[in-house]
Length: 256
Image 1: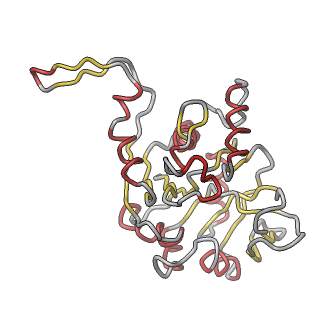
Image 2: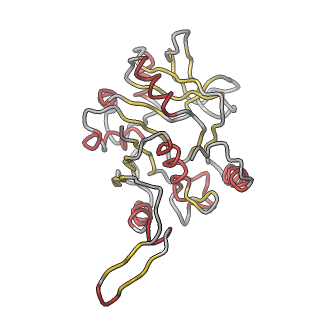
Image 3: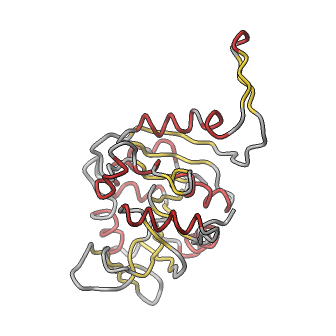
């Protein structure tokens, strides 16, 4: 099963870091946050990734093209036009990097990579959030629910949109950022059937608006409730909190 990661946003709320880097390359413990996300999926056995690039796409592409050069010891044979890499990398990832446009919305980015997922169920998440969600259990739940999309629902910290979830674990309503309302929110870590891409009109479609709202109205959006660790990296404060957790040696999302 392929994993699609949304990595094209400008990260304006993290402007202190994203003036120089795309948000997915902002580091936690000397590794980009996108690396941490990919390690979470790889630990569950998913090692084929499709990265939806946009803002500073060339930097994300360069990171993966030069992955071994930056992370492993090398011997350069200048006369032979050859480079030897030393060590035994644990990452066995296949990474497809697609430039999905600078101003494209989240739904539009997913729509653009449709040819790369084909007719297969795929995972989808944001390139700026980590969690200790059980990916295997999430996928099993999705298959059992037999809905077009499953979203990982996490308790609201009070600054995100709300999911109304019924007794069948089905989302009956999806609504963004209400005032003074608490509940379950969209935590990313989706599992998606390819038919759900038909709910996306084009580049200007936000995945979190019309597609998810319509899926909820049609009882086609399931919710996998996760009450463990989950944290996005929206602000510099978030980045510092994640950095402190990583440096403590007790990062809750480290499952590898």
